Image (tube, rainbow, N blue to C red; front, top):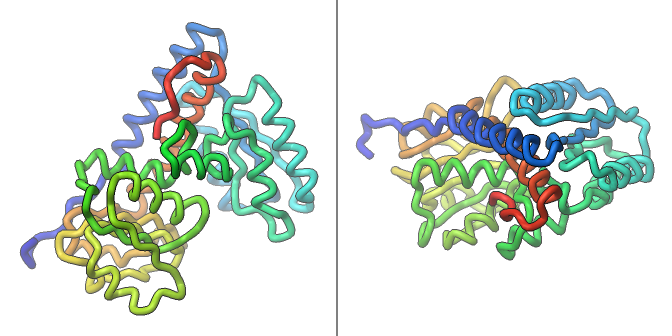
Length: 292
């Protein structure tokens, strides 16, 4: 890229609308054929304002897509055992096709134990070890929603991954680690970076694709970006700020996601698509595999 060019924005919001519209069509088809409306159950522990806002938004998107939603609100003092019991009950409920545990939960709760209480066939958020294993080995299952959304964005913009060097900044079990595995499955050469990575900038400057998923505002600056790289900012920090310094990075990247309007809408769209796919599988076990 010349010094006068700026990166093309990757429109996650527009792509997400198309994915949700497609999911709505499939939901309608399932209801017509079977009389069953796909249903997503959302569990919220406590009254964190941001989490409550996310839950309301997801329920509103469900309604627009013709997906039923069940909201389970639990008090902040809920124990791990009580939460596990709730998720187990939802897993056994034939009227529920997908389960979302809004996270993070309170520090007193064993979040991993809670995730593992979700039946794999209803793990539409892709948070269980079973889902991670299936995704890593290319087996039927559900991808973590944000990584799944990132891969769809890369496909939409025809980003060639085979043989390219991808750097993932962040190693969370539901974002950094799974997106690296999905990139590896596309024959990218993947490097994970994190808080203990020495000379992060030097590693980033070799990357053809950068995925920022560390939760530190504007950590990655334009000077760290290889000219012509693709930059996916999966971070979201107070003030609508991502993990990438957008203005400086845009002067060097070829493609870049904005915050908001990039990765965020894709996460919800994939969640709804996977809920509908879960309903299809549960009402017709011979149907197609989950979207990856």
